[in-house]
Length: 211
Image (tube, rainbow, N blue to C red):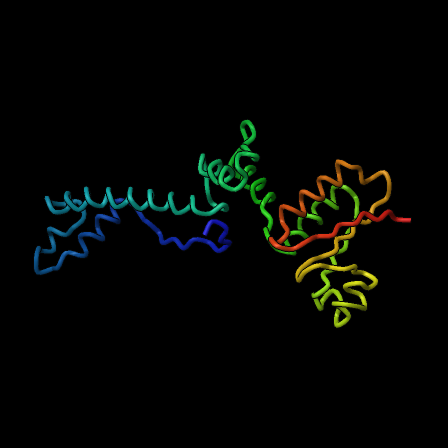
């Protein structure tokens, strides 16, 4: 998987001569004498060396392709292709930007989508940049409202709620001090929420000024 965090298992390839010797070792002893199977001697050894060179090259070609299936190990133009797939060309490589620097930028722009956790990460990232705090309250979530959720208490129609219309709907309160939250910043926050929120739910967003 592209986002797999586990390392790719790799065995030591050795040299092309090692590949040739492995081929020689697979030939039954009853077919040829010991002298014919010595490395670097005779026609059989020459044939094995030719085949060993090809398998050695194929190993590294396959290894290269395998590395390109992970953001953590992809290189060259493959990183550009990954960025284009994920972000539609909105996160191009900077002039003279090396693979590792570009890889970090790609990873920083990836966040879970269609989840409450994704909304939390996006808002936390913005809050660090724009100096605001926030709270997310989901009426049906017992971690938010315990048993005081739907139709009373702290949830729907209650102190922290207010007529939620469906399961999974959330209230998001942005706490700010003026003039920190402008109309442009509000638009940025709305866009971040819409990009990460689960489909089919409504997010009620309120901007509350700190006293």
